[in-house]
Image (cartoon, rainbow, N blue to C red; front, side):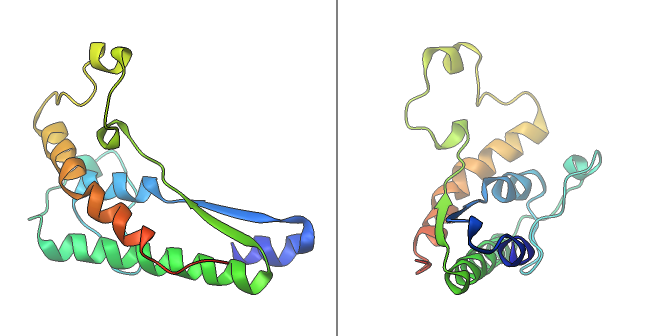
Length: 138
C-alpha cells in the first residue's frame, strides 16, 4: 500500500481495505501470528490441527487491528480517504436467501468444515467489532 500511494501521487482518491480473507484463513487453521496473521492456506494447511486457544484468537485480533490501523495511518499521511469494507460470508448473514438455504450453505460436510464453520460463528462478531472500534478516519 505504501508503494502504491507513493507512486500514484494524487491519482488515488480513496483506499478501501477488505480484510475478510484474513478471518477466513484464521478459521481454517485456528492459528495466527500477532504480526503476520494466519498462515497462507496451502493444500495441507486445512488438515493441520492446533489446540485452539484464546491466545490464537487474541493474536489474530492484534494482527488485524495493527495492520488496519497502519493502513489508515498511511492513507491519512498521503491525504487519501480510507474505508474498511466488511467482506462477509454466509455465516455473517442474518437471513439466508432461498438459494443459499436450498444449497445447504453452512451445513458442514465433515470434521474440518464443522470446525471451520464453528469458528466462523463463534468469532465473527468479535473480529468485526475489533476493527470497527479502531479510530482510523483518514
